[in-house]
Image (cartoon, rainbow, N blue to C red; front, side, top):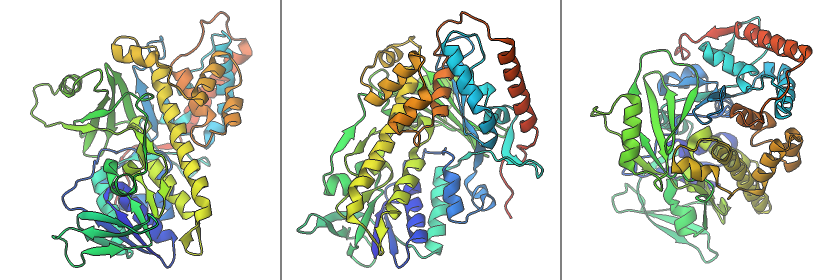
Length: 495
């Protein structure tokens, strides 16, 4: 079977590597335009990315130094809430030690919702928050039996180059060419791609199946096949970003930092050679120049001549990701703003799920509709978790935050989650009932809402036993943290 991937970047080369590795008797060709640069700002991951490298047998010592990569234990959210003691919280990647603390955390959240003045802040309960604060990495000393989950930060341009070199060394064919036309057959499938006159060698190229990694324009799935695009604009207001890196030679905490600003939020992503900074905002509430001025002021670069990149985001998804003989992957299939760094997670999940649909070396048509439903549900589950960050915030200092706090364009799923929390009911049971725990677990929903301090006023003190349980939990996490190696060096040495 012949598969053509249209578009490179991290998404295209992730797809090429996974397809080439997993499918036997399949020939993969990637066509990449020499005149179109990838977006190149997705520089953080979820914990799932480690599985990607493990699947391909790529060690951290091989890829991380080449991509200026660092470890990521979670995301610290700052200034999303004004509740005293909840101005910031850490959304952890959960590890094995958290199995010993998570039930106490959920119990404390319920007690706090019932008016008991108990510590229900997520930073007190999960080991990753302790490790990040102490600038420790995710790897333990030899005598510690528990593992900690983690993701990565990386230079997306360098990662794309690394994956391209890896894929071509394993047999993936790489063509640098611009597609002039997409030709369909009588059944509406993609028949062949017509390359422009400047292409070397052949002018037309055909395949059995096509993967669209062409970015927001969706050259195959949206333009040629006319699959409808469903906007999330009524749910998520942000549609633009300003990107402005700063240099750093100091050891940074192994975390992404998300700081709420006047009209959106700022990311700070530490690499080995710089910090990636960006401001995600809504053009309905401020201009690009206003956003850049606010970001530069915050970074102390107001009078600096370092150029900033201005990006427009297309937030939403296609109606069908797999249509005819084409699969959309990456920005062509959909995009949710990068608040929880889910872009590569969706790429990986889409390709792995597509590979699971193969029978007798071909994708099974009977699995197409369930596949599309599965990916759509995952995207919308992630969207709802992102929307909750804005809807649950009590900031009201600008029209932007006022509009987010009053936004009632919420899915039924999210409405039920918020109602469950505010009614002091079993949120874990609600998440399980909805069948959405595979997108974000009950722990993540508890962390978000408790991290914001979405609680009624406390009217009673915790019992002595409850206080002792919390104290023992603190001691447990402090003792566990001491078994993790200090973050020096911040990346593994090249072997």
